[in-house]
Image (cartoon, rainbow, N blue to C red; front, side):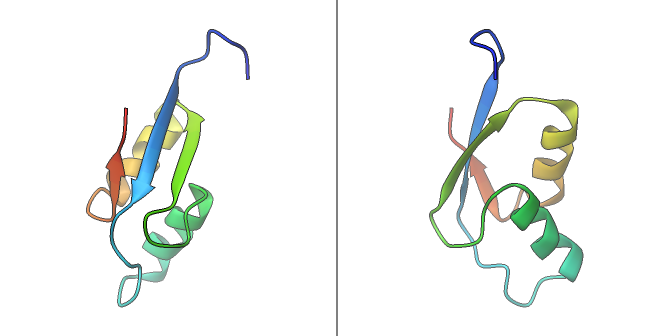
Length: 62
């Protein structure tokens, strides 16, 4: 990552249990798999779309 690249930090706030498999896979793709775990990723349209799919399970910490 270059120094000028924007990043977004997300935190998992809800369990993926009893959720569709696609939402569980999206959390894993974001680098989240346990409650209160945080992940810092590049702020790209693809990452923003993944966050939108599981917005009820994560919180954006900026």
